[in-house]
Image (cartoon, rainbow over the protein chains, first blue to last red):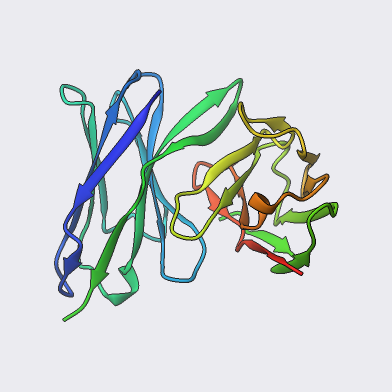
Length: 120
Length: 107
């Protein structure tokens, strides 16, 4: 049973860099894309970006200039960095696994979420 | 970006009701459409992928249909544990986008 465990700083000041890590336990790390998604308080879901085992990334164009997703295959970890945060970046951040059947991708395993608050 | 629009935004229903939620895409996305259920304080849970394929372990009262730009999620007989918020998500474009959500509440 694959599990994702995520952690990172929960309180940031404006202009700082958000940094979160997600560890993958109990399953294969290769052969999947690994995603980050966020949800502002009381709002819907926003996909941030993804990375695969080889380090190939895709990002949400609206966040691309501030986002870096990286992977450490030796530790079965992947990480998110979001620079120059503002109050608008306050959200619950989720990591998730993107699986594929035929050409169809879907996020089938999710972390529990990390609440990140940006406040001066 | 491909815009996803769900209707209704909220819905009141009773246990045993048949419920349908609609998701429309701003352009054709073939069958690259997934549905998720989210309960308060919890991560989303995958229900349906590729528009109509039921995820393993999901009760058969959930079904999905559609292709192109219009999709539906149907719950055939609502159970108490189904009151939650539902999101559609397109995976046609690598910049994945979600609908705004449909909150299913007890009537």
